[in-house]
Length: 230
Ligand code: DC
Image (tube, rainbow, N blue to C red; front, side):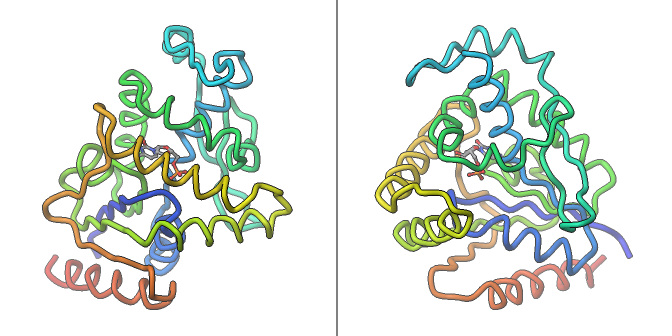
């Protein structure tokens, strides 16, 4: 059967990765979390003194881009792919609040985006891919066979993210998580470079009131309709 590209875009913490992983598992496709790629670059900037308080030394980061290698490695014990920065597994570190608080500044740099978009397109050459992010259906794969735009009420998103962090033993407060989500929504939608916007032909899924199983069912209905026509 022909393979397709499924592009999932949407706001922070609205379950994009949960759904992308569900779909990838159901179809035996590769899943790529592009947010993790911007997070890995942010970690590089933090580790190399390019983020001082709230200021990012953009010129230094752009100059260092050739030295920054972002990749994924498959962890067969956990049955998931993990993000690597210059060969080091940084999957845990990139999920913390420090990286979350700075990632928008890094993700709006044109040169960073160009490098990440090239890498993402390379990963999609064989199709059979589910990719989530903010600009996948609009910029990375405007020809994707299926584009999904996900959304959910911001307080519900903050509560879900807070519960996830708590389960991992992270002591970040609900208020901090809520502030982080509202700030990132603002940054993601208002930046000049590849802002988060719904592609005209994207299917919208609002998962504020539905379960992961229900959202998967909705997505699979669209997917099988497309695959049947191939
Ligand atoms: O999905 P996430 O929260 O892990 O993404 C981290 C940040 O990276 C988010 O604030 C927006 C940015 N991002 C982006 O600009 N473009 C993408 N394709 C994916 C993420």
